[in-house]
Image: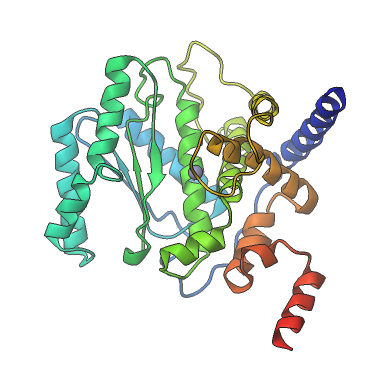
Amino acid sequence: MKSIAIISLFVIAGAIVFVLHWASTPSSTLKLSPTNLFGVKQENQTEVFIASDVSQAVEQGVKETLAAAVKSWGSSGHLEFWVLGKDRTAAEKLAAAFCERRVARGDMTERDCLDDSDNKDHGFLMYQELGAEALSSGQPRMDAANNGGAEWGIHRLTSSLPLGFSGSLGIAGEGDQLTILHEYWHSVQRSFLQTQDQNLSQQLMGPTWFVEGSAVAMAEITSAKLLASGELSKWNNSPRPWPSLEERMTNKMKLVQQWRKKCQSLLPESYGGECTQMAYESGGWAILYLMKKFGGDVLRKSFYPDVERLGWGKCLLPPQSVNATATAESA
Ligand SMILES: [Zn+2]
């Protein structure tokens, strides 16, 4: 046990030294494919839509975070971010505005769209109820997700009320920034794939620990960097000070050490079950290790540009192994 703890501390120290160094290095511009499913251009292509009961501070917080994400990682193409508040009537109006937009763009028929908005799983009302429940119970909870949209050439993101931006329940606004960066990173992952096939795109994105671990690692590192440079505002609106990157990653490692006894795998391959959270915590650490070995921009510069051509598994092999596999397959 003692040796495990010492190894863990070494990994923490090494990775944090690396990420802090990387956090101080400016990122360069990405090469973009001329034809892209999401119409990627070198500009901020995000649009934010809020329910009428959501405050301007929330709208500003979401817009500022998305703009900083685009500046850090490049544009992922057309992106719509829909933010729900706590009021049901306001949520229904936002759902109607969403459908108006889909119909006007020829994406959906009005009937199909209205049915979709009533869907409790990914419909707006689910997010509205979640925010309302958090406020009435005093139990903080926020949910945001990337709900597809590739068939319309967009990334469709939806969130419940960002409690930190709205100054509710003593939640830090910095936590909402992290959530938005995390979700934006998923759109970046997806933007490298041109397939509209949902199953194939999930396969190409890789196992759950890789998809979520990379979103955790990129969001954590980037938020620390942007807060330090002033490109993201510090909110200072929680009774407890916002923890440093070192503290946050150390806490994740502590959770991993606790759960490793009860979870079969440190790196879950799929969602579901109580060990799913490990995909985020230990997956985040696994991606930091990948970056320590191959550079902070390995995912955007090397991995994702090749993943559709090579497949997820082959993309992680060293170049000589890929060539050998390709030769064997063509033989
Ligand atoms: Zn995620």
